Image (cartoon, rainbow, N blue to C red):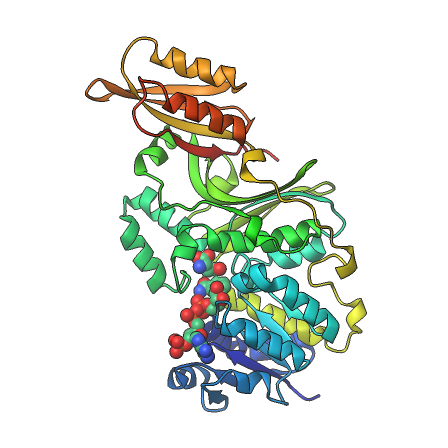
Length: 436
Ligand code: NDP
Ligand code: HSE
């Protein structure tokens, strides 16, 4: 049988890993796929670098449009990133009737509704396992393995770079900027690492998972994003004293009034498996009504782990090439005419527990005033610690609250900040028990 011809666009970290895996495991891959899969053509801005990675038997060009227009290419693999040229290339490939594999979560979260609609019209597949949680087959699990379930919630550590930074800072006392530079050197970070640090990348991945889990369109514009750049070592240490670890968590949950879709630093009890996911590892906790909680763990970034997911998609597409498009697994798990536009809840309507750090004047009655305000807003307290005087008669009060709607927490925080005896803004972090 004629081999499947792969056209690879972008031979950087993931593209290079994909070329390596396709070559190294060629025999096993073809035994699994039922026919041989070969890297036929590759495009990279720096064509010479691509030639060094791909070898002389592969056609190498610097113009990726030559791949999407090439009549002999069966599967186009987009590993350039971003939403400019990548969007044009993917749409052109689809228009040309080519199947697409991509690791580009930004592209799918922001333009996925358009891309999947075009792919549906043309009867081609767009596969994207590598777009979420690197090498972990979480898309396959959500879309196929858990298809019997009504998914209730997903909570995940889904940005390797920020988890690597938090882990190295905690374990080695390393400096934020140094660890970020190391994550870039190791190929974990996005081209613009602000996307990692400020929660955008995790938001892209969460948006994709929520679409598949709940049968809703991509709604990235409604995703609440808060990153790790404002986190202080002090709050991480206080949280630990109280038995919690701080992680950048992506959380989506179905509620009676809509879907929660949020990314932010989160206190997680240290006994939970998620709290112990360190370094570049990712983990995703999925709650299904039939199966209960299930947890998926593995490398969240890096050349070979991500290539593992890219190549799995290439094999999947190869196996399904001859299947009638109507009988393939739908791109977003639900049949395209069965998507529901459930509302995404604004962050003020989300219900969570909170960690509050308040800098107060160390005098009688201050704590009583703070707890009175919390009580007035219906917020009950789980734990309080007072950290001695921090200078000039000031003390810090750290409070863990029980669950409350965010708008009431905001009102209470504003009232606390207005007290004469409180200095500066209250530090607030969200907290999730994640007890299934
Ligand atoms: P890299 O920056 O390492 O690679 C991108 C490659 O694309 C570079 O080699 C670049 O070439 C090439 N390129 C850029 N523009 C063009 C163009 N117009 N035509 C041809 N080639 C071009 O990125 P990554 O491999 O890290 O990421 C690729 C994608 O995979 C992104 O969408 C990313 O979000 C995603 N991803 C990344 C993971 C990771 O661990 N790194 C994990 C999961 C997903 P040149 O260097 O010459 O400019
Ligand atoms: N920059 C991403 C991360 C790559 O650090 O998780 C994997 O998607």
